Image 1 (cartoon, rainbow, N blue to C red):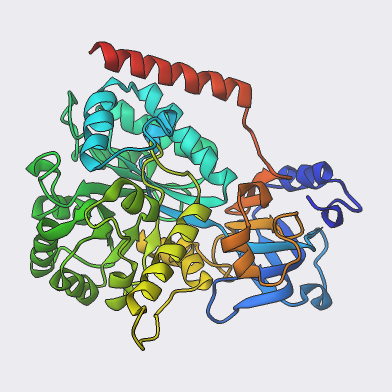
Image 2: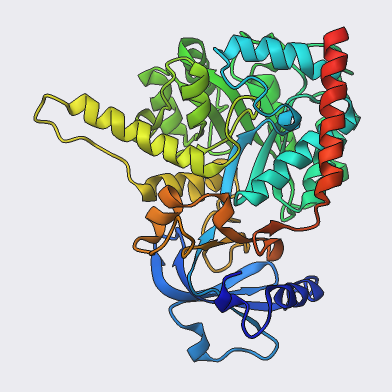
Length: 472
């Protein structure tokens, strides 16, 4: 923590106090003196303010909560020189692949990724490998300020593979969404989607827990056949279970035709999130807008891998009145953090807007830093059904928040808190991460991680998977 946070107690002493009372639902923490970026339309940005947490919830945000008196037993932490912000929300990541990070950084297209990773390597994964990859992805998410991660878990070869993915989310303390899908290729037990009933009964007994469940599927049968294509059968499964649906590989004319058909059949709505959405027709966007369907963009994935048009569909989404969430997608080729997604989208959209108006008298319609931060927080939460839970520093919501150092070399002096978060900061500036009021990163270090052991586990898993894949 910054010097102001370590007096009169050291960062270690503050952490001890935080953890000693972590199970107390009445525990109060007052974070004081920060610039607060709430992402709440009513509260806005406080240049200098306080935030009060009780148990797992935010109970108050204001310019000076101490003047109203601080209850006995409240742990007061001075965060002067920092920015308080909501945790980021990653709406789509294939977490099991984390051992394969940047193994193909210059992948040429979707087909190359599919054949290399999903067809060539995925069948070699044991349940333990799924656990290792998912845990690594979730810990990395926490380190970079992502407090909510949807794991699009599409390597569920057996029930044990699904169990391992869920256990990894539980063990890290992230707000996780297990979006379950069977593998694209290779041998599997044929347990999906029926096994979702067992998963819900075994792991997801209430609607207010830290890890929740969704159905994951694909838009069309082009990649892996008709059984994975969203439609009436899978729509019924999701409705019967009372879970949302995340639909990946939403590209081009085939997906556009499917979207129009889904709308006609009553299979779209706010509980459905469509991922990528590049190259869609105007009719598809209108159907999405009319039904309130959510959108998840993957800015670096679309642009770097070259998915359909290779242009993140931000203008199309905003033109239809849809404010999207953002996602990481595949770490085999892409960056792992939300700062990169925000900056990529911000730069691409503004470049296209100016380029489109170049040589004319038109005024470019450009998004700003507040827009991309909104996409990375509140809109991301809304797009996966958690808008009432997280995504903004609103009293009553869960205490999923970041303490970001604003006086580090790369951030000082603090002139614009949102601009600093989006364009200046990176994971090294994140001093603390709280998820549901529990501290998960403190003094710049993710807690409860034995890094040497983790490194050994990750390397062993990677080496075994690749060797098995090569000899198969």
